[in-house]
Image (tube, rainbow, N blue to C red; front, side, top):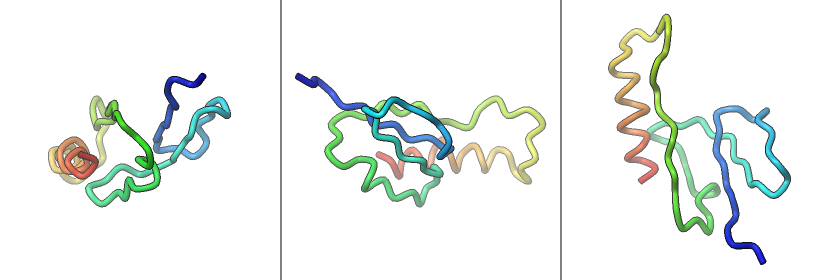
Length: 77
């Protein structure tokens, strides 16, 4: 009997997981459509964040941080 099913989202389509894991490569933004990835989901463990970027080339690193860590997380919620 299967107790739970693992669904994973990553930035990379090349990530490899066992065949029992549903994988959705998704770019996480404030506009991400989570519909397919969240189908049948009861619990979310959100671990994605923009942190520890060495030699950041973003024009406005704080805005990028807020876009991913705040706006994108609110979109997921």
